[in-house]
Image 1 (tube, rainbow, N blue to C red):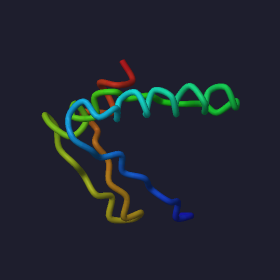
Image 2: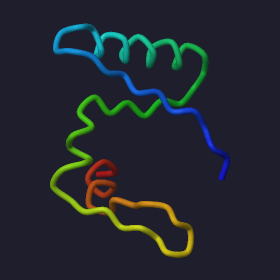
Image 3: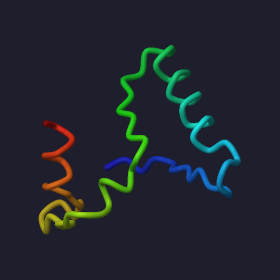
Image 4: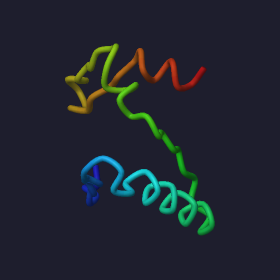
Length: 70
């Protein structure tokens, strides 16, 4: 797997994180990127479980993945 840079968007309530993210999504789409926008990421990290594939070492969230694909 190729390692990619990750960016964390952090700040106090009402500082503009959601607006900045929405603008980044709009820019990426205008550049022809396929964007999978998840404005409420908490739904993916709560109410399910994580499974680590022993062969790949990657983590999966089968319940959350099923919900998003429905």
